[in-house]
Length: 165
Length: 76
Image (cartoon, rainbow over all chains, first blue to last red; front, side, top):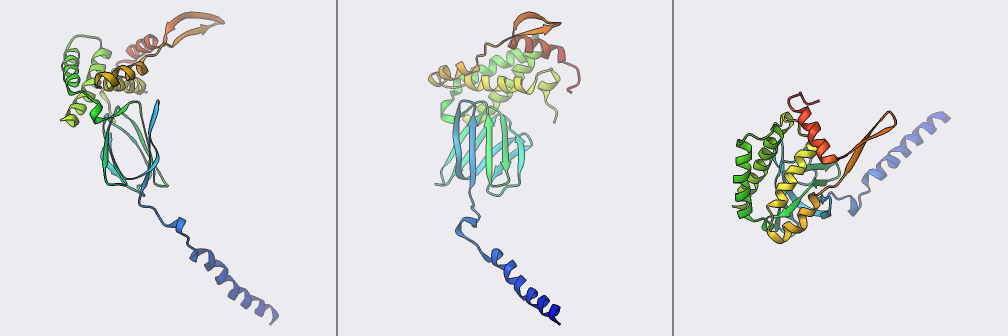
């Protein structure tokens, strides 16, 4: 009889103890719909954990747009255009020379690249002249490495030419 | 994923540095001059064998030679 009473009071006491932490919800727990972007180059950090709405990246597996709460992943980037849509609604475009984008579980996106510049910093004339130069080397009779390098350059330059138009 | 540069013996590091170099060269003149300095490297190394120091060589040149050697062999 005595043990039954203890059991009953335990039953009554437990649900309250379990429910209390679950029901508590502060402002800090409200899920943000922004993604924290860090865009880092070896010599400069362009974005430092800044809240943005969306980032479009040229992954090797295809173009992708990253929003908040994206599934965690690691993507190798092609040399190409990264577009950042900021909180104010405006968007910024950077041409990166290739690197990696890492989506972390807590809505954080880290992009690492060797070189990255806003589009207005590029000169279309120098891109064109380099394309014809690289084509000459790629079709020439240089060493296998020279030809491979020229083909990499062509890939980058053609991607650059396409976005500068 | 199969990359054409890999078959020629180039490493990913080399691929990145070539891509970065060509991006720097495509900049407008004022930005280009400041950026191109970042591509230069002057690292030298020597291989030690049986307690004797080998010949000094430029790391970039040594890398190029080893990449030429790796050409054609399946990427490991």
